[in-house]
Image (cartoon, rainbow, N blue to C red):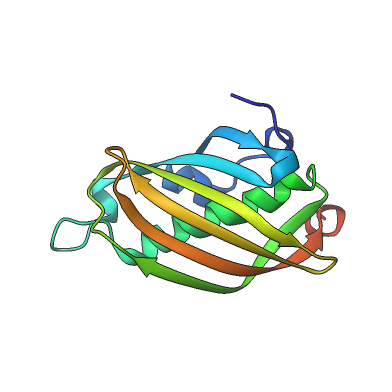
Length: 139
C-alpha cells in the first residue's frame, strides 16, 4: 500500500464503522481507492446494504481524495452530494474510488464510485466540498 497523509492522523470512528482501508492512491492525481466492509448490519429488510450506508462510503472516499491530494493540508466538509444507485449492494467487500476533478481555494469538486467484488458498479456520486485548513480542523 502507498503511504499517504492519511497515515499521519487517527482513523475516524465512522471509518472504523465502515471497515475503511486505503488500498491504493495517486495523491498527485487526486485519486484514491478504498475498500469497505459491507456488513450484514448495514442491510435493509431485503438483504441489501441500505443506501445511506452506501452514501456514507462514497462520502468517506471522496473527502480523503482531497486530503491525500493536498498532502494533509486540507480537510473537507461536504456541501452537496448527488448519488446514483445503480445496482443492489450485497454484503461483502465494496470498493470505492474517487477523483478530484477540480481543486479550488475554498471548494473542490470530486467524483466517486462504488463497486462490488465482482466488478458490478453499485453507485456513483459527485460532490462539492468546502476546504478547511487541517490546522484549524484539528484543534
